[in-house]
Structure formats: structure tokens, C-alpha cells
Length: 295
Image (cartoon, rainbow, N blue to C red):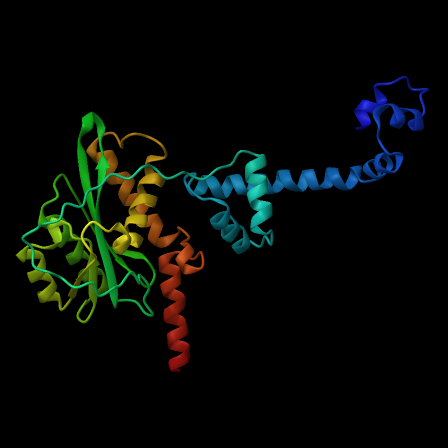
């Protein structure tokens, strides 16, 4: 507004200029009086934008406003999510969007019936009681693939077991479950939930569950919602590691990229289901609280 008024001859009065521009003089003076405060807000927005860019960069460009806000609050900032989201829009700072999913679940029609012990409840009141697993494809150059099987603890969504291979045989999922048992120390009395992928039905996987004292659970055939939390985890992994690319390149690069992300996921990445704490931190606080109550 001020530039429009000053474009006129300097001898022209404010009253006349406001008449020509159809602007109330009170509005003009109010705008003029707020110039210093407005400039201060703009400076503060630029400072906050730099802090947001730093957090956004540390996340690999993955975080949206909720996780960025949680990170800023831990650093002492008290800005609300609306302001963080507004500044991200203003300065074109965006999280990574979802990619279209590709189906990897191929049910085995000859497999015995396994009950659904989850009923779409992917939460747990303590660690080591409920686990969920799934397989996802990892695209490579020249149209090739690796496959990732994971085992997550429902309490903290921590990745306790995983396996990468160039096949989807039963070994892929048994290796992930064995790693989970090694990570947790024991799994007896726990439930492991998966979809009806053919890899989870064969005798070898069932025998391993029996050996570990794990009860198997499966959702309905062809219903992704029955294993939605695990599928959402894999979608986040590929969204944040591929960052819009069509593939990971060669197999070695793919393995290193996924390993780095899984490590960061457990130790640093904030999870909305954990109140925006990382899985490791969420479990640490639970353990501390449990010891305090027992004392």
C-alpha cells in the first residue's frame, strides 16, 4: 500500500491519495503503524524457516509439519503446528508424498486356516507381546527387485527383525522372525500377525513359530486393512528412501540405504503412534516408568 501511495507526486496529500485508491485513511495509518511489528514477524518467520529446513534436511526430506514440530519442541521451540505448516508452505518445504503401492501378497489356497487374533488392533500395552510382519518389494535398476521382510513390535512399532533377499521364499520371513527372537531374547507367549502371503503358511514357518512359542495370526484374504499398520510402515520406508525415484540403483546401494533407514527409524525417527517419540525412546521411557512403579 505504501509503495502505491508514494508513486504519486510527493506534494499530494494522504487524504487525496486514499480517495483516489479507494482506501480508508484509518486503514492506511493502521497499516503504517504496524510496519515495525510486521517486519519483526517476517524476520522471526525467516529464522524459524531455517530451523525447519535444518530438521527437514536431517530427516532426509521426509518429515511433514507434525514431526518437525515435535523435533522443534524438543529443542525448546513452542510454536504450534499451524504456524510450522504455514511457514513450510510459504518457504516451499514439503515432506515426501506417498507412492502408489504394488501388491506383493500372493495367498496360498492350500494353506491351513489361521485365526485372526488381532482384529485390526495393532496396539499393545507392553513390548514383546504382539508382533506383525509383512513383505515388500524394493525396485532395482533394469527392472529387477529385492524383497524385504520385517517383524515389528506393536507396542512401539520398533523393527525387531528384518531380512532382504532376491527371492520371496519362506526363508525370507523365517530369517526376519529369527532375528526378532534374537533381538528380543525370547518370544514365547507372543502373537505374530501377518497377511495371507504364501511365505507365512508353509510348514517351515509354522514350525519356527512353534519352536519359538509364538501363536500365528492372519487377517482375511485380500483385505489389506487387516495388516494396515505393517503396510503403512513399508510405504513410509519406500517413500522416504526412494524420494520419488523409480528404483534404488544396484542391489548393494539398496541394501545400504534400507539398512541406514531402519537404523534411523528405530533410534531417531519420530513415530506418531508413540507421541512423536522414536521406538527406542518410547520403549526406554516405558521401561523407566515400569521400574519407578515397581520401586
